Image (cartoon, rainbow, N blue to C red):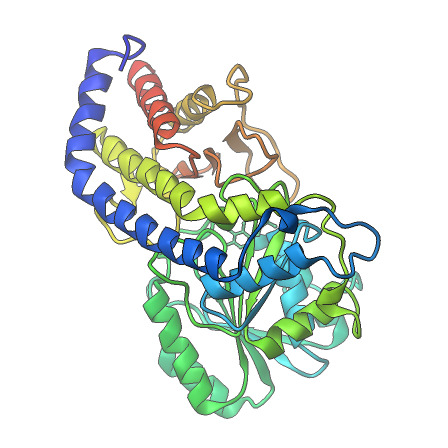
Length: 414
Ligand SMILES: *Cc1c(COP(=O)(O)O)cnc(C)c1O
């Protein structure tokens, strides 16, 4: 490392890398394994240059688009998938899945507590304001809290499924998202899947955002749903989302994505196929870069005396890391460091601002090639005790390392 950092920071980062080496090796091993599976699927499906030819209009006969759907199914261990640049974000993908599966009178049952904030209005959790939420269409909602913020309450789930025959979707959020809780492993999601299928024929739907490619496989579900500007887009997809799962569930979702009777057969790819293929090719590698950046940060900021979660050597099932500063100025210094270590907008100084829908000001750092992309290095934290930064991403370990060192140096100087 050059002389841009203090000797203390340089020493700390070197020490961190020595300590993290075995963890990095485990991460690389997963990336090698998942890459092999992606390459095998690409070979078996005979991916070729003609798959990148853009379609327009209705998009009938877009061979590349249909092949990408099958590749996602292969790589995620599912029967079918739909992958589209027209899905505007993760919230939209989840909304398509839920509206595809649920009918009036059905119940949506979340077993991981309250879902990610952006779904409140899609589900109609807090109110019914006639904007077309599931609740407006007569879909009921129930939730079961995680036990100690860690594990799924299987007993409560069993009791609810036995009592309430209206449950049509059992919903799980794999990642901690922006909550102080543990991320669920694929094994623990599989347990829910097995239990549900023993009792009834409800669909199991997983919000898989931030979890893709972190473990050697994806969880079992009727639908796995996520955003392409997170893990599976590999930093290359410009926009989009995916839903992968059973043939039946994917067909129902496709009828909601476009229209009943049309489903997945229409939708011009508009030249986005190549980015999505390349992103899938890179995803295992890119996720490993993000993971290593998070592991390094966990070690460095724990050494500096802050609370981190997960710890550097803890098992991970998503790419999110949190650092708790117990001090607003340090939280801001951290975000400024991350911004300064980003490839785009490095000259910008992030400031806390009052974001619509949030009770406290939020500070955000992001310098991404794709707007809002969080497989690229990004951080944010609400300005309220305990002053926690949630951060994730990093397209290359080298640039992630630089950003972490910059942030550590800024906090040291502060
Ligand atoms: C990102 C994310 C979503 C969807 O958010 P968008 O900003 O709409 O893409 C949903 N759930 C979790 C856990 C997420 O991390």
